[in-house]
Image (cartoon, rainbow, N blue to C red; front, side, top):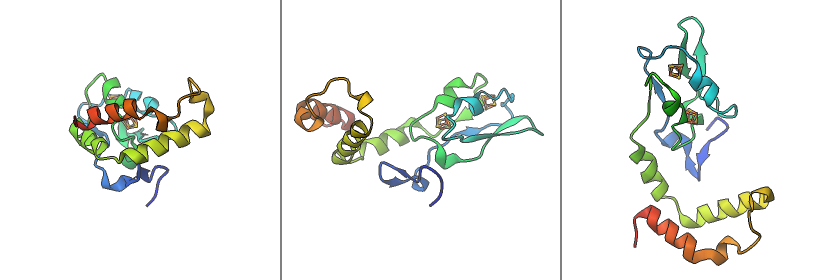
Length: 137
Ligand code: SF4
Ligand code: SF4
């Protein structure tokens, strides 16, 4: 397994079919997608000979993101149906997400808006949110 993002919430990234596809017939070579995709991910490269964007590192694409598609004014970028990402999100274990959130807040205290309560203590809200996301009542 290679690349800087080998897993998505514990799921091997190579098992997830989510990345942009460029239609070279529509691509005008404006470069917006190359610039838009974050420097850490750099999914796109640019072919100077054809003056077209090229998907170089599809597994670096953030699952569920479609910023480059939105920003392509020539509709040259397509993605799988967003239902693919939603289905994957619904299947994520709640405990894992909680743990990842707590780890992130611990590692970057600047993200904490109010000191209390901790996520574990806020189960009614978090459970309601997760139930909504999963379509459970
Ligand atoms: S934003 Fe669209 S038109 Fe511009 S380079 Fe990327 S794919 Fe091509
Ligand atoms: S969807 Fe987001 S992460 Fe994926 S290639 Fe486009 S801008 Fe980059």
